[in-house]
Image (tube, one colour):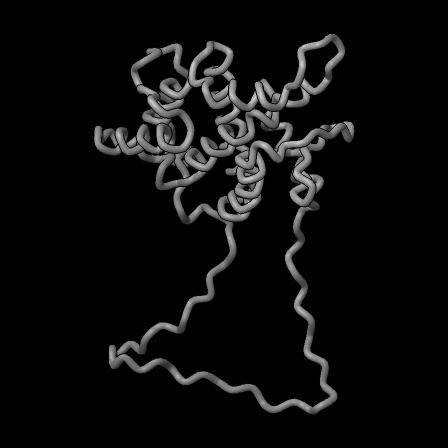
Length: 228
């Protein structure tokens, strides 16, 4: 969880350290909640889990670690015995790359590209990964040991329900204008105007949809960023 005002990373037990030197961490955190609102909790959580597994598999095998190593150097601090910040900094260092990859995997238009069988669609997907997460990544570079290549092969044979569609997104509802008349005259139907109300009338207060508390959101995010 992040305190945006003070630029502090807050650990699960309240431990804190400064992240002002790495603004990409705060930026990634600010993109996490909109991803949830756009695609829904279920899809966002699945995408974060998949992205975390892929990223940590890369890093454990010393692949695509350039950006991660730079963040580790800046956040971990001195390597003395008992320095707990080294362990606490791992989720913060992973946050930008995991969220960036999760945004790709959560977007239905991008998630379905490996399953189309088109080489152009596959190249488009790989280019998105290179641009947002891992510059220089090659799909066939690591063979079957590459977690993203394994994920791509899985999606080629996955059922349609696992590829999602843009209609599955549970983001904010869009208010549509009334349809045109059936005679195609281009004239919109007449709208009924409500009757005037007395001056002392109190309009009914619409209840806002229930949203999860930001602290709970931060706890879920840290769970997805941890090494699995």
